[in-house]
Image (tube, rainbow, N blue to C red; front, top):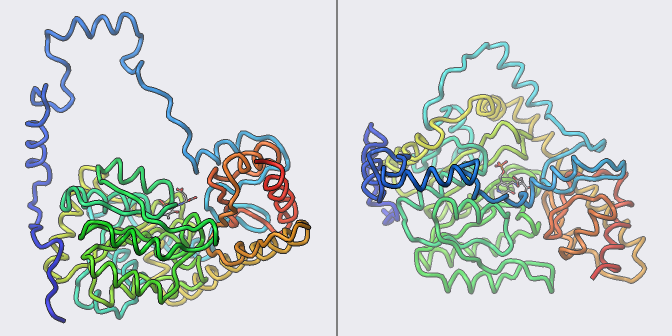
Length: 460
Ligand code: KET
């Protein structure tokens, strides 16, 4: 393949010592630095300090109460509700038909194997478990992908999807400073927090068209074309959260054309591989098409949903680039960013993934369980639609529910209507009108349809 100029061409290999240089830099930037980042104010300021202590019992008196998280806060409110009717459709977490949390059989088998092997609990390397990193890149791209064969990918185990996005954002902040990340409107709410906390500027591109309850493809392309050349475009690899609307294969190709023309970099968030179509391969189609063009990519992966490893915090940051030598440099810098943040990642989830993906029998079993989970969600999606159509005599078209894919349905309910769902019907959901179908059972579809119809027609 012809050598393509890389956006990361100026990155140097990280030295062994990871902190000295930046520590020195930070110290010199601190106006009151005494050589210690958390130094107390100088002596002349102490009287002010004592007065403050005398009038306010705590040095933290000015700390305001943070609002509850728009997604995880919903689960907190759900736990506090004592009604028998309550239904948690807030967080995207898979439940069984009995609305119980689900540990995949294949995960239990992998854990049994791990226990039998009696593996130790020593630190992992900064980049994580080698077997996991190999398995995760192969799951993403396919084991035969030239990107893997040519060693043009830097993979670092991350703290699930969120931590992997955060590490990529830290890399962008350091090596592409000032470059804007464009995020879809709407998107998963935490994208904004992650970019804000990493000091990465962002703006939005049009994505959802409420009139068609579909993709605003023209608006999306126009906004990507209007962005400064060399911007970063954050895309949901599949099962867009919260809308459940993905581009078609043809649309993905046109998106890739625009990104290449504009010399943008695509940044894929892959949190639902397997949950859109039920097939792990099909759901990697977008990323694989982009990679086949020789494009440089960021990809953050998560195993929270597809292996049900929510609490294990297992995922990966991948950077696909133009040469193996550059991939090594990028990996060295990802490690350098990870070391002072969390040092090295946890081992348990990494071993589960490595065992499942690395063993053909377990892998097949996983695929079957994945299809089972995706299938159950499709069933309740259909049942909810049927109930809405049967109960709503107005003739409103509810078919958008069937067109959406993945764990969620974006109902179109407004904030006050969503609040009615919770306050009157004990249905817990996010205020943007999103419901997690993964938390719904067939038995509850009729009740949910009643709640939606009441909220839609009786609340402004
Ligand atoms: N990306 C997207 C698009 C996403 O929806 C989530 C989680 C993540 C990344 C991160 O998941 P992690 O567990 O860090 O691997 N979304 C669900 C949970 C959450 O908000 O944390 C949700 O939207 O309900």
